Image (cartoon, chains in turn orange, red):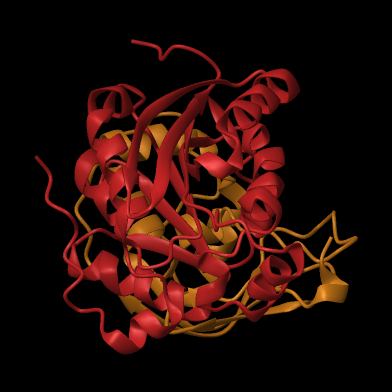
Length: 123
Length: 222
């Protein structure tokens, strides 16, 4: 499953593509929603690792506009529940992710992102 | 005691393309179980297994640490293996986030100094180098064991990435066999990257002398 928590950690790794290579842009996606158990401790711990703007943008590409544009200073349970849904419950099953810089297309099939590169593309 | 993950959904056909858990898998599970208190004390948020194969080890780690308490990332270069990893996670009710890739390449820039638990059960069987390289290119079951000279061709590539991936409290579990020269691996990681190590378990099984070595920056923060 490409969940936004993982998408927020993926960058284009084509040789020489070192800037503006994150976040990958979703294209032609099919999504599924699956409930996950809420763990506020985990979310609080994970929050510092998130690239916020990338997460907000990517969620919007998937039709979810529930996140505030700026990461709130006060972290309450309501916010964590919203974050929980966006990070962990939206699954991109099919489609692709495109590098905003070099336009390399990474397909997603059966929920698995194919990030393999051909020999000549490897950095 | 945490049971070995349920693998009953995997078939003979799966095991034609994906390494079937064996003694080297089980020694890794035993090492993780032995270290469970230490692992929990790290409060891991990101666990990463490279070459997750059947998904057995990460499913076990998820059961050990709790399915909601960490992100469990898995990579494999073999498309069959990525499918099996996903299905084994589902079978055992552990969400494994799988990426089809070599090593952790597309994750590397974002995971710098962020991985709390890193697992690698590499292709460690000594073969000629060409055999190991072809096995990786073919992205099939041979890639799960053919390790090139001293069985270290693939492991050596990963060893160079470990320190940049590990968080300050992070730890790395490596499965190895005697022919890999455990002492020289440990020396290389200490001298090259300042990573301390210990042998968590060693045992002879099925004609192999297996080791699980754990690397970290130092004693865990209590």
